[in-house]
Length: 94
Image 1 (spheres, rainbow, N blue to C red):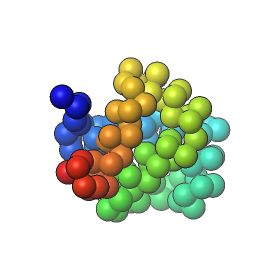
Image 2 (cartoon, one colour):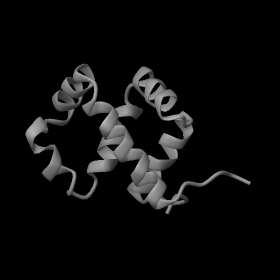
Image 3 (cartoon, rainbow, N blue to C red):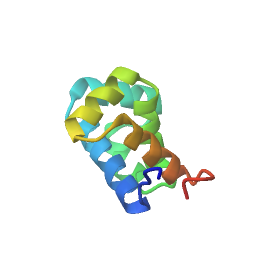
């Protein structure tokens, strides 16, 4: 049976990913550059629909960052992928 991740677990992974970004100045600079969201706007941006999907997209777009985060979080890269799809409400993940 295929593994699934709940909506709550998906949100928790995305929040953990955001915390990981915020703790690393280089990653934060890269996230800000790619997203266009200034660091002081992160808290308000986090309330927007789709923000957490965007956080996970940041990892999906750069395999070394994805692998480092997954290892740090003690989860598999596939868990991050499933969480991203679940949060996006994609068919088969809702």
